[in-house]
Length: 261
Length: 322
Image 1 (tube, one colour):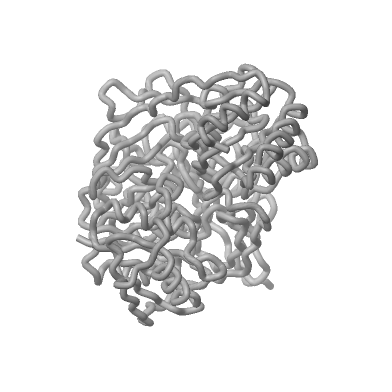
Image 2 (cartoon, helix red, strand yellow):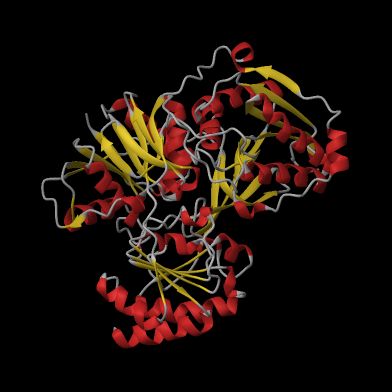
């Protein structure tokens, strides 16, 4: 038989300002205005959730468990319920109890503790959160665990010899790498298209339990104080509105004027 | 204080364009700079850097010439970089926001217990940095007090260092590469072939949006225009998703970030995620048949009308002008 290892997949998910919302800076210029704004699962994490479910659906005997975890406000319950409704087995919410702006490094340390507690051997997560746009946590988690990493995954395959082959999106094309479990994979846009989940499944998921933890009580050894200080946040200066032109000739004249051609 | 900069080589051994921008950014830290170069072409790259460019403060090139570092696997580079950073008295470590830089630096940061500052677009002083967040909708100023500061530099925000030569720069060859104990292998790299200039460093960029309908139209309309302008071709997420062109052309929050002299957006609506990747371009031209397309709000010059008439006319007239 194959040397395939049973997968215990962990999917970290983050609740972020919905991608369609244009965020505004708050009055103290230290963060963004969050009241009355729509939040959603980070789109790249949604792709990771979808991938975990597809791996499970494709090869039931390969997957022992799928677990989603979110670190943040108690409101992240909503996105976790969504994960359950889509087909993730279990989930936990690690409440940051009012602490905002926890940096990727602290998140990676908490996730390492979760991986160890759950015995996970595959972490699937978004390559980047669309709020802080850091693109850090997966690489950091892999580093802390001393596991192989495959960032920006466009394709994930489980080979018969037990190895995992990942096609990664890189600057000028694609790169294929192979590693043995355990490993961390971060997901890019074209890995899959996340499914839509209907109301009946969502209603059913409401009855499922969510494990609730508290950063301070359950992870007391991890320092979540930020290392970086946010001095200020501002909205970029809007460019003065451009000129609408009426013809190609006019455009060429203008481009000559500003020496763009 | 001193800065360590991670330099990448192109396939032919020349210094990668993003590394030239990285060195320009490193100069702004006003520290003596040491550059580290790895891989089987490291010496060639070091010589090329020394004889063809000018970077004030660059004092030393440390090279690790070893073919097992050619694939730049973060699992292999990390132990080496961590060793250099722990052993040296570097106050700053900088990498560019290339695929390699982005995969390796956070891993190094975790092992040094330092939170990096990512996608730095402005260096205000050696501890204060500006970076865009929320797809560039918010600009954040960050102060880093860490003893070792780790920075991922957004290459498009820093013009590359000038040509010249640096006679006093020393080259130090080293072989003390720590072993990698992880079972990970590079299988292959599939490069997207293109005769055109590289997207992130091109002087001119012509971008096609979803309005171009199909692959054939995309090619037929954009290629001749890109040819006369010696431009790179870019795309929006929508045009990539609709199969009009290759993934690697995507410009935006999660694609490439470009800042060319001239950016011509054709049939691009202007979603915030796309704007995040191009709004720092010097001159932006939008050509779209929808008068309400948000792209017109960031364009310096807008031309509303039929793409299939405007673009060929523009191509023809630009061709004559040139």
